[in-house]
Image (cartoon, rainbow, N blue to C red):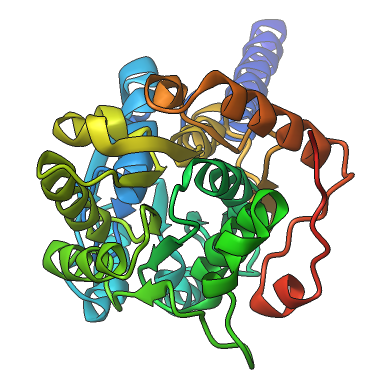
Length: 365
């Protein structure tokens, strides 16, 4: 009898230890993916909105690709104005999203505020850097891709006047401007003259819309630049660029030989009704960045506190595939040579107006 009691006690002890070990193992191995919980991703756009055919749309498509492949839940929110940024990010946190994206450099302060308030949550921001242990920063060397667009514009212009339309006159958009002008200057110094400003100011053929969604403003600025003699314009202005394409098409339909260059997505595909006036587009792999960040969450390998910057070498910026439809092969061959020179660090592309002022063009034949 005594022996049976001892055996029963030992068996109960072993069972208790096994249960405790099982609970400990489950906690140690838990990740959003392994525990079987549904991953939920939130994304807040900047004022351009999800359907800007450009920057925000690319970010949205990256998460949608992950949604399809990994079965994650996805909740996007569109910001109508900068005052929405912080409240939108916080709403996504409170909706129990495992990762919250802020799209655009304008969301930097809002991201700092919300990520600081919710230090136990995970965030990612596109196009700027937020130094916080729970934020992954996703940046791009936009100046390098814009340099290649400048090579195309400089070789394709017949008037020796080309233009640039930016969204807002801030450093992240100045990168597009500086890189583009450096590319033009490398192949056609004459065409670059009216793009160059003084005392850190933009040149005469550089216009800023103070918006990323005002298509009417894009139309007005483009008409003004084309009217001043420009026959090629490159934009880095989100939805504003749609207005530029409209102006280019109207002029081309009336017999004027003008061209436009798109940004972020292959805009001959995202806005196909304007494909006949689009020489090329500078691809910015925002979709790849948002997809990869989502995959980090799915795999339980989130890299908070890290900054990833993608350029020509990393295939983070590139020339759109439809460029061959309107841009001659010899021009695209030259673009490829400049692309390789950037990859091999033979050309350091300027990212600011100050760097542009000190830039020495490299001529490649």
